[in-house]
Image (cartoon, rainbow, N blue to C red; front, side):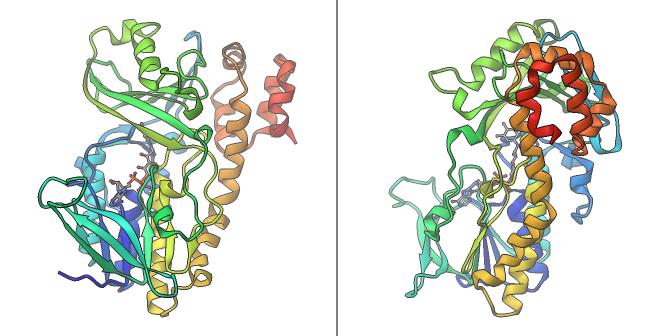
Length: 412
Ligand SMILES: Cc1cc2nc3c(=O)[nH]c(=O)nc-3n(C[C@H](O)[C@H](O)[C@H](O)COP(=O)(O)OP(=O)(O)OC[C@H]3O[C@@H](n4cnc5c(N)ncnc54)[C@H](O)[C@@H]3O)c2cc1C
């Protein structure tokens, strides 16, 4: 077994697998490490993705990779009396089958020449005598993992560039001790909980329900996986989930309460949940011989918490830069900054703008939302999705001038 690589990628989610594929395509000796014994499982995701995120990724989606094709989105008011349906190119997408999709991406990394290790967990980052990142310490569990690792192989694997693609609960950056902190206050996360359910009548649309009562600082969703099955979930503000009032409780109350009629025959076949960063991307993404990408780097859309597409974009950029670094024999922070600069240039302004909208929306109560649903139409939602806030905010303010303070940032 090889223990010396050019590039090591930790985490075989969408970010890590695409990064490993790109680095390998550049000729770098690449290793992709995943702690789970089966890539993609268990799923912790609503699995919704827009078509635009697949384009440019060089992925041929197979029929197994997605459960359904989505032709738009329906947004529903808190009192359930109004909805706005958007059916545009940019609202089209898929509800993926991430178990298959994530495995497919990891296979593409393998096909490009990367080595892949599953059931192998990075437990530390190793440094050289100059305190530079030099590889990882792993525990590879042929037997069931034991907390003291006595039943497992523990060994070091070296590399020149280490990429942390270890998701929302990222620990690798902290292990690296390079001054990149991936942990943010709870207020910068959403806490998500979801059932995959059968006996739920579904359309070809994703459905988003706004309600401070049942999803404080977040929303509830129904993402169809078929004509009668869906991911049904809730995301609530990370700082709203304490005092024993967890996302699950809100979701259960919504399903049994106002949505009872729709869900009266529904049965859960899976439970999924986890944290979703919804603040801004980390400012610093690289250090000497080190990069952090995807959801580990908080690269998630702050409006809806979608992170799959941005994780892949991040992996695409980071993997290519890591490969170039190997070919140039330069693993310095200043070389790897090409990735950070590319990210900030291509996605920074758009994501900052979307965070602005999120911050404004967070201040609205259910009466505000009900009134807004009476005022706006699908064209306004398209404008918001395109980042054109001013006209829409002015339209809302005409009916509800008391929102001036909350929406001020959208009209300047
Ligand atoms: C409830 C919920 C619903 C969501 N719904 C959606 C949605 O509908 N659409 C959307 O776009 N996004 C959604 N997201 C967000 C999306 O799941 C993530 O943004 C996306 O998976 C990020 O991809 P990634 O590759 O950065 O990280 P991940 O997919 O989290 O992959 C990280 C990988 O690293 C591995 N790993 C971690 N630590 C180590 C270690 N030390 N050693 C080895 N391996 C390690 C993990 O096992 C994991 O496989 C949702 C999230 C949640 C929690």
